[in-house]
Image (cartoon, rainbow, N blue to C red; front, side):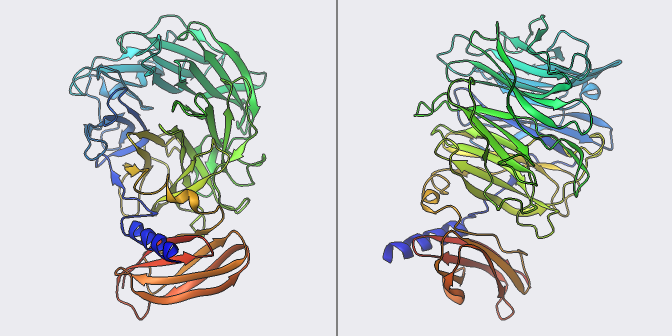
Length: 540
């Protein structure tokens, strides 16, 4: 009993520090729209991160790339919203940031020159972004391109350490994935047009992503999409190179999927996709070298009738792949939407996936940000609400028809995980890039959370803040005595909401704060062997 009380008080303390909603911040407050964040870390300095965004300034009609840097692990950020390289009016977004081992910065992006739209170019900076080179073309083709991806070989033991790899897909015939590389820190790119695949009949190849394995292998994954309406993703293609991109083995579809590509995602009327995101376990642990690919899918098991985050994994370098694993742990077919997942495998082999989620919105029309984490290679998951504020997704001016952006991001470094997302919270005039510095050790994603049985959960109360009443939903993983109590910020018990046997499943209870003063309160949930807590804010 003493141990249980201690753990419960520990959870309350964590709640006071922001658990389960972690402190969030805008990485570069601005008056123009910032969408499509991507973030990378320095190969040798875990405190240095480099983030990019697609910036859209409606007043000047300029589309460009934001460049944001931190050298102290996310405590402070600096940068700007426009790469001033003399060609700012020709930039067209889709950022791809890279940090080379010597600190050279590379930013890949789309650019439009004359009649050629959406070609992939890059700029290079050798002084932390103070100055940039003129744009450098990355692919030897005039075909229009779509959704490029860039990475660097940061494996110090690799024969190709420091080599940069770039992939994109052709919008016009032959609708395939092409590959390029740079061996001089982005100053130039190989002139050959390296076509990785041919595409299946009736399919296009879209949204490729590239990453590097534990020994410097190069892995590329893409969506094999239907080339007619509804254009949804039907499979995942995969290619790998063991010699720095000189030669490849390839499969047009290593497993089937049913992506959520659509011109409008109900109820927001925004354009979405289910392009694959990929990462490799390079922890040196028991799953070293495992590859993980994540997409958003629906109407194909294990996904339900609403979009869910689905993971597939390979333990043999991409030769074979597991069946799909449903990542988000809310009830199946509950009408809630999860989309835009991004994945990172941390130094301990934990899989961290960030995504948008509507599970806590009764009307299902506003999203929050969740991280799901697995410490056993994706077999089991725990969901963690990053922040309680919600926003209503909407298209962005200058972003194209129905475009909210195509992705959010996550990266781990030095014992922390950094999710990044675009949001236009109530009262905000524009979209901004938000983040949170989540310490895996002290906040508890890695430690005490693993002791809480799956299915035992107290959800964030709604509304929150509230006046004077709010609803608290909770789940019970097996029948037994459950207690829900409310405490003030000093830990004094205010009332008992539930104290009795509850059957397995989801329950709810209403808390009325009519007789209380404005302030922070906590609702603690206790069962036979587990405790949870949420922070509630009463505003009168």
